Image (cartoon, rainbow, N blue to C red; front, side):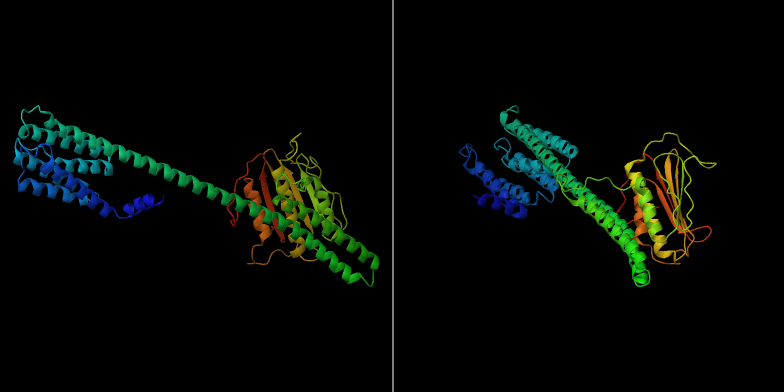
Length: 433
């Protein structure tokens, strides 16, 4: 069953052998028609006719590499045969012209096919009418016109079919590559998004756990009550970390899994809890909120933290009445920027440092600024994953994020998040803004 397809594959891999076989078959047909055809009893061709037949059929071996040259040689041999035979011959050498013209039409463009085909048909027809059988309107004289025209049309049809199949295959391959690239891009974006979420959750809560555990170990013997309070904070921070990790890992589950997390993502609505956690860890934080909308301010906490400015509470506020809730992406990104910034302050600003969080909602964007008066980032230090994650988050919303030394010392993080902006994919590993 598979022998014939295997043979076809072998012939496609060895076109020279195929062409040599075709030339032999055409030569056999031409010589058979000359010496054993229906007109063989009335006319016996001489050696010149046989030599022209061998020449015309032999050059068909090169029909793929030099189609126009082969057509010219076969046409010349056919004209010579018709002229030499006079009114006795039947132009059987012209069979090689049919094969050569088919090859030209199949392997060149349509314009070349029609020009060359018309010239070949007209030229051979005129020659056979002038030097062929009598009378001049004999059917044998116009058979060459019909066969050469049919060869040109068949070759053009084959070429068009091949071009169509090639275009379909290229389109299918291009579509497949596009689907694969799109799938890879989506997987990379999802991987980076989950990596940012995990970093934000782990870095924040583990930093608080580390500080509270150190405090508990330091005062365990002298002030056991405060040590128990610190351990309670450790337990609360670890439980929050586990809850957020469970929610983040749940994103990897099947959409129909009943164990997938149903609670909303954190946002500015729970900012008070985030600020209270840092205050309990010993970092004084002041919160200032301007504009309108559900962006809360925290009350004064321990360590001398000033009370938050309420919406519309100071001159120059760009209040937007009844602005409504923030978009989910903006709300989550603003929360993560504040979380990561305060975590960096707690880890790197040094003891005694204070932080200030400013949230300003305008008509078109929400601006989040986190300042501290600590020692700032070391000069030339490496950029951490947290800063890269903040920039990627804001860039995905079409916003900007700037991080660097503050004007009066310390460190400053400023993010501008446009409202209503569509999410823009950010290439993996690329820092935005």
